[in-house]
Image 1 (cartoon, one colour):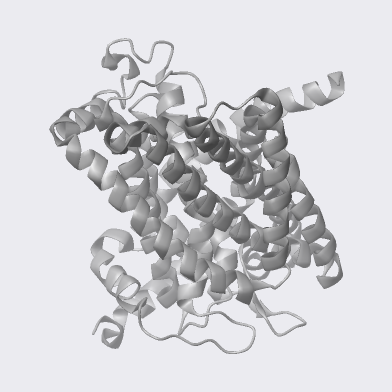
Image 2 (spheres, helix red, strand yellow):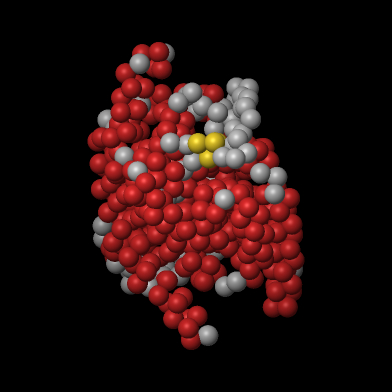
Length: 470
């Protein structure tokens, strides 16, 4: 136990600081600005074009050939991995651990994260290849190895290793843990829940979720895509509607909510001592950390899903990266933050809350029982789809490292870890998720910066052709 505790303390302490404070933070902001300049501020100057060619085409009939998925299935699979507990629980934790000003840094990371994710997807399509089954495969491990040359295969392998480990944290344990917590919270709204009953519910949820995920995961990317393209639009629309209703009821607090966010972005103590103990370093790190946890820009994970898309070219699919970050962080995370702040519910700072804060915020309008039930259902759908997306990422990385024969072994382990996540302590789950999240970004950023000229050339070629702008 002493050895295990030492390892956990190292993961949540020095290793976590290295991954986030000294690596991800400068790469996300300064690197994002570099990619923005190199690509002519594509996420701002061509934002309308990106929306027209993503949202505008989502409801058109789309088909995909053998070994591919439609652009809509690719984006919903990627969104399934990003639109999840990061938008609800993650945003709440950003406020609780970093103060209201953390939302400002979350927004900033998202604005430059749009071009980062765009670049990842462009490279994923550029350097993808067919596997032994004829399926399109790609992502950071492929564009690092093929784009930088054989001498960099070790870096591609390092990304794959970190991504596999992250798939168990961000993509599995943290998600199912949140599902279980919200379900128990829903039960508590209707009846008293003893310690024994809580333990039983955790094991039951673990078994049910493992079974459901097994049925879908073992069906491959086409089955995952078929499920996510139905789940993502449905749950996103309902969550947005209910959040807007709460904000609308408390509309008089909207101005002060934005005031809290901006006034405490650089001076956390400016909110009158409510965030006592929070320093600027915390505000910045937790804003960036939860932005990355939510939209995954810089992690390279979404590029793995997009690599399977039936698309005309790299930029055509890359535009979906801009759309994804906008919807995931600028829209959904912002609505979560405003719902919490405008409702006036109390927040215990320097803690890592679960779903209870957003439940309390919704309860100010809809009542406690309905709010608990809605959050339980929303979180369950959000988190379930995230697990499906990350199961694909882990599968592709295992396939890259060890071949197709090892995939089934990974999938069995992944399904078993679902149960572990349901019954594990919340703090342990999030520490693992955070650290390996940050570590997998390191090799990805190296690849992004080294191949930024390739992305810039593809961007110039695409927008230089007037036929693409018609």
